[in-house]
Image (cartoon, one colour):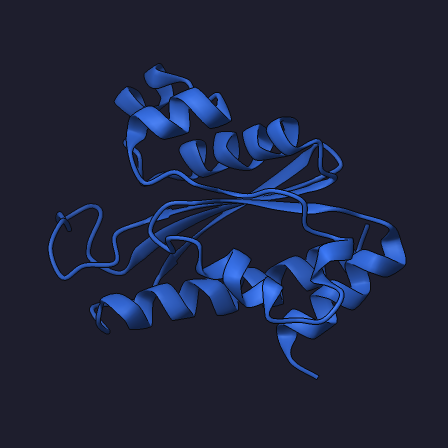
Length: 158
């Protein structure tokens, strides 16, 4: 059973709905979930909010949070996850923001750095992963893998 299938089954068992707020992954999390039969039982809506303005408008990310911490930060990923739960009226929300590359990295936020927010029934956990300069699409794929594996563990413990 794939990580996506495990997550869909777990969401169905818990009677949870999930929504994604994706930036650097560009909808790959939603697409991976939709590959699974019965995804329609747990997914109603998700957002690909690549631009800062979209994060602010559709997810309620505070512009001051972006200014203070940068768009690639656990603080923004937290607000994305909470915001997508509110917008979609879902029990589970995921926020993903990162630097897939090959450009855009800095000394403090290098290419391959991705921040994640996981909101489950209002409780948010955040993480930062350094995938390294493994190539744009590999960073994106690694991010999706991290989301599904991490989220399954987090939900099991709720």
